[in-house]
Image (tube, rainbow, N blue to C red; front, top):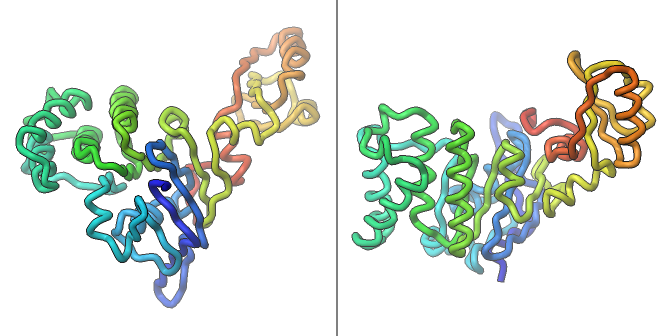
Length: 306
């Protein structure tokens, strides 16, 4: 049985006499124990999907089942199986990170001894030690976000919804969180992650789905998405070439500082030798997930649906 099944899921918002279709007959299955990334621009339908699947929002049509339970008609049983980091979660300003962990676990019915053990473990794993006893109102945004994620991961819930979990964190803190998420998956939790950081999606997901306009455009490993470009290599030139000259070799992206060419391996030697002969600096690397996303969707992940 899949951990999550969505069939013909539709959500229509009605505002000021107009309707907006946030989800449009979406179908999705996520196997148990998988780390799954949901990618899409703001307004593409990611957060709406998570709110429905985590029992916070009713669908207009279709259904979602979590471990075989209908999230609408069996919401209480579903909630006992999930942990959720919402996109705009807030801490109680007068409580410290340590107190948040303890109180949240106790409210969820975790025993005192287990609560203390998990609190100690997550405080250390998430790098919360230096400010574990600092009231939330005195923490930075990134520190507060770490505490929120720690609370949810400490539940060891069978299904974890993580909506932009590392938002506002510095690169070092993000990597600490990544490792704790990997540890949760190794313990058996299924993870559904949304993120605008495409390197994070690659690092954390077994599979990913790209959603646009409430529909899934692609599902599979990140390497398969990149392979759909038909171009494996990115060359960047510090001038010395025109876009017209490079166009026969692949896709050209030009800005004021450099020219980027997405091309095949067979063209690399010829173009690098030509660049060296012209005295032009050239760098070579693999195509990125961001470039594959842009090719598939037509716009970058940071661009809003509107």
